[in-house]
Length: 237
Length: 269
Image (cartoon, rainbow over all chains, first blue to last red; front, side, top):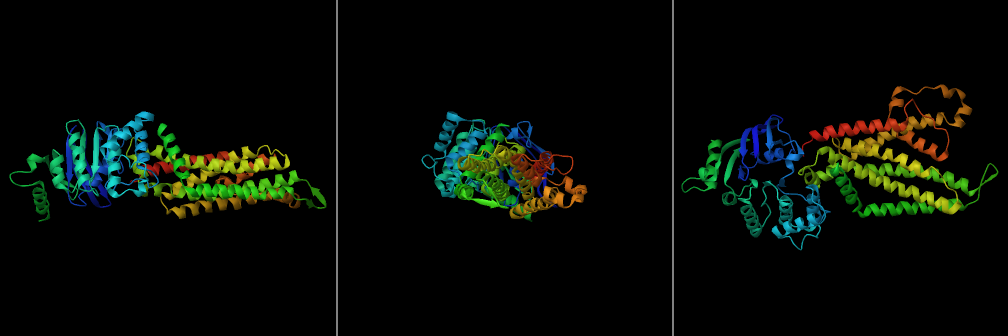
């Protein structure tokens, strides 16, 4: 379970995240939606302790986000995920495997498993400098899936992926449903969110405008996109 | 602690991927081997013929310090990019998105760079040691011990450059550290010179000159070199103040590392 309690993050006088509180239950597939600069990535960075909240608290599985132990079961993909150019995909995944405590044959097996999942088998020995953006995203997704994490934090995971890649990610996320994995998905692609997530929150200017199940947010003949636009336009008025 | 070792090993491996590392090592060894011709010549000083072993011994001591000075430059270049490169290529996210403490990451990076440079310097010093041994049959005892003693200087430079690179541009942080070393070189070098046998016999009153407090407390990088020199020469070491230079430098390393960890803990990734 992830709990954000009155979390605020200020950069100088500007509040990137403004008094945000919500709880993400275990096994929930949760989407964080909002236009650029809404504060979605700031929340993700606070979850991973890359930045500290100015006030409020974040707990992951009962541990404060500042405790590295809280990241033990987290898989993470950054928006435009970077892989050191001197590492091959295999080396990158092996390092992740080693950092989560896998070694020897276990690590090799696990790396092999995720390479199959992200369709990068056969390409893993190439230097990552030679990978396309989509291939890097696939390797990053593989790293996030290593060790069967309890939490997946995906910040724009389908950026740079081709339609087949997008479909693969959707399938992976659908497979994780019902397996107790908590997914936090930041995405601009609302149609994908509708297909893969159960709950969503719409953020704007650092505040949560609505958080509910997608079925409750989207009513009648509206799509998630319609609702999203309606909320943002209402705030702009 | 396990993570520190892992990151140390990764750091060494990553640095060793660069071809320039091997080119530099090869060129340095070639340079050292090229001076072996000095040991063969016939030298006369003040009308007395100097034997090959004495020449080799003096040349080795000079090259010992030249290598150390070259290593300061190399270490600064390597360490100034540690944090900025990790930030640019995603390495910092790789480590810190896992259950790695920030101090483990910093310590791993610093230790890895230090270990690599220590080995690099030791190989060069070992090359001289073996060359002298092979050419003249002279066994300069203390030479390799002195090399290990000097490695603390490398750690100081790494810690200093890394710490400064958290606030200053990479190149400026390396330059600033070189400046710190240069001031120490002038201050401690002057002290060593005043206390040398030649100056003491020429100007006996110089012995009574007490150095200013800041000179006594200043990081004793040059003094460690002088101490290493004394180990090789088996001569008397003229220390400045009551604290041994190794103690002085250990204190500064500890202080800088602590400050670096505190600052890095507050840094936004």
